[in-house]
Image 1 (cartoon, rainbow, N blue to C red):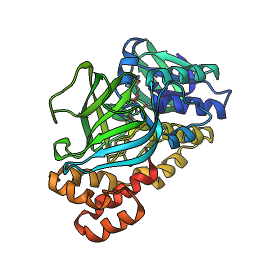
Image 2: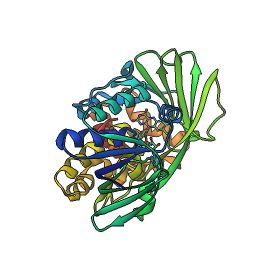
Image 3: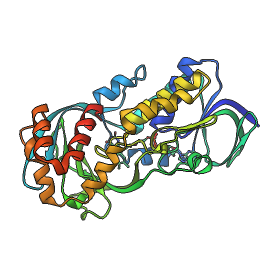
Image 4: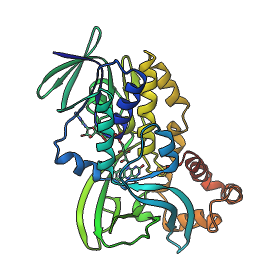
Length: 352
Ligand SMILES: Cc1cc2nc3c(=O)[nH]c(=O)nc-3n(C[C@H](O)[C@H](O)[C@H](O)COP(=O)(O)OP(=O)(O)OC[C@H]3O[C@@H](n4cnc5c(N)ncnc54)[C@H](O)[C@@H]3O)c2cc1C
């Protein structure tokens, strides 16, 4: 049976971020990343995404370099049910996510990491770590990282909590452009059940999506996908010699629905504490992190119950933009909507 210092289950953004940062800190360690997908289904699965990430996320992931950039994003444009349109600065990128993941795989392997294309089936704790059962045989390791997405096998085998909600999302690639090259567009309304419809540029196409069942697809659909977004993160992200990162821990922000930045950051943090030989610091980082605040999930639940009038009332103080004076006005004049005002403010602080 092959033995590794660390096995990371999932070669997505959180898993590869963890593997790369770990080998940068501990070049001698034997690190394995395993993923269940084949060479055809891997890019298809990872294309199911708006593929938007911010400048702040790019800064945080260093020395991993961003590759596969499709568009430089400068603005976000929001459309609200009463006709209000807010255009705000939003510095970031639309990427070709499979291409970016490909370059991360190369970097990981270049540092001496191994990738195994096999599915984790079950996990057993052993005296000195874990024994993992995969389709092709057993693997043992001292430390285990669950980076295996919304329906994490590591989580279901070793942890007792689940993310509080799984939001089924439909995503479409439409022929032609609805958004300009440098703008990501969001449409809000009660029909989107606490979330939104996005329209992002994607080469000559538009990447559009919304929670399943909110509306009929429209436009010239080239590709249609469906995937779940886990929100309402776990409290416990460490158990013994294992930890969970990214979607496996339900870390997506329930207000912005951005998950890439926190996936990559959590992978980096887990690597840091693994290299120190104790994951307690990773749990403390999560406990103290803005990302783990329950206010975001509570605001999501509240927003789910709003009608279009509630939304219009909420956005009225922000119609000229999201300046601090608009937040103060909204906080003072809309006591019934303070939870959402604060969640928005905090969500702006941690960005996307
Ligand atoms: C439609 C959609 C649009 C989105 N758009 C954006 C966006 O524009 N910006 C943003 O910031 N966030 C976005 N998100 C959220 C973001 O995509 C996720 O939060 C992020 O990808 C999480 O990365 P991850 O590595 O933790 O998980 P994943 O990307 O889900 O990767 C998990 C990996 O684990 C593997 N795996 C699973 N089970 C096993 C197993 N048993 N054995 C081995 N391998 C396994 C999977 O094959 C997969 O490769 C979007 C999400 C969706 C669904």
